[in-house]
Length: 153
Length: 310
Image 1 (cartoon, rainbow over the protein chains, first blue to last red):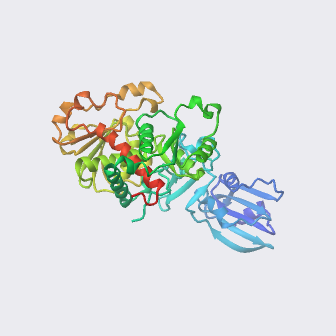
Image 2 (cartoon, rainbow over the protein chains, first blue to last red):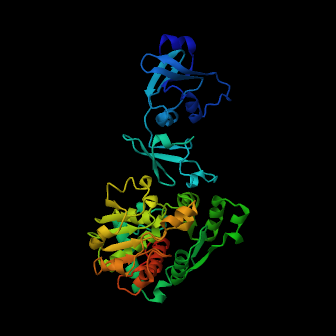
Image 3 (cartoon, rainbow over the protein chains, first blue to last red):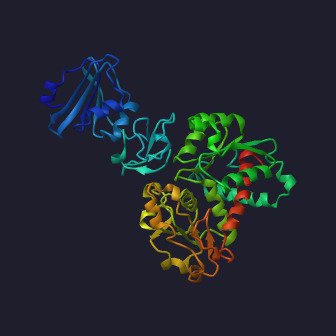
């Protein structure tokens, strides 16, 4: 993390820091991870923080919550370059990159309006990643392929 | 080979291997050879429950006739106005209830993926009898069976699929089924109705496909012409429908330019895409195709209901 961002975002004692989020995507990341702040933890969100590597980046710090790998891998299609830092007693105890999961459930909507997952039935959307190199996705219900640009929140 | 269809959903033909397909074709041959009294033991005391959210003649009637031939009965809804769907009941609730009353559920629904969702909810197996413009797997099974019976083989054939390739669910199921064979597929459609690329991503690596906007250039090499109806109900704009209807009419002058033994198929109902003058020719296969439908569906039901039906 650059010095400037250190000034903007305070250190946390315990929790998760999601760093190197593409600029402007932090709010989407919060939504994808269902981080609402309702549980009372301090959550710090910084947008467009100057970054030596990427020019700009977003950062999220969630105090007192240790995000699991299954949770953070959901970010693969939103913030593929983000890094996850698990902090315990002010020390970095785990640093991990995001891995593409085989499928992402309940986060994105299928863009096909005629898909049963968009029908108002009690159904969770399920998007399979069928080609991890070319990033080809497929709705498990209507089976149409789609690109990450077509995903709808 | 153990019966791969026993207690199994038929949601997509993509779930079946070539061995599975050959298994159901051989079961269909067997069903056709059985005496009525032998057949009527295969579904005795069993119930098929159907719900058709969209109109159907052949599919619903052939399922009912097939179940009756196995000695079973059918219950269901094809007029939604007389059902709780009209009161706003969800598909999920409707399926859960039909599941209590039947051994197999047959569903036709206008949304893509509807049968997959129903199969997740139902304890009993679900047959997709048409899910939006996604799939109609038992139609594809009977289409492949028809080709096999009419031509004696499927491998090595040149097959044109003509008409509404964008919205026609039978087209997609047939294409997915054909990926199990070595065939040349020609897709012939006007620009407005060309195949949806997002639905055939995995087909391209398994099947040789060429796309055309007219039929004439490929007619002499075709073994099968599979014609589909330009579906009025799939068009949001009726003006667009009027522009393309009747674009690819097959008539006797079309047949004159094709191989003498070319087979003309159609999932029916037809409008004006096959001239009635073709009906009396030896090339017209579409009514026999509909006939195979009942026997093939009887075979599928017998396999789903009995671990060892024969």
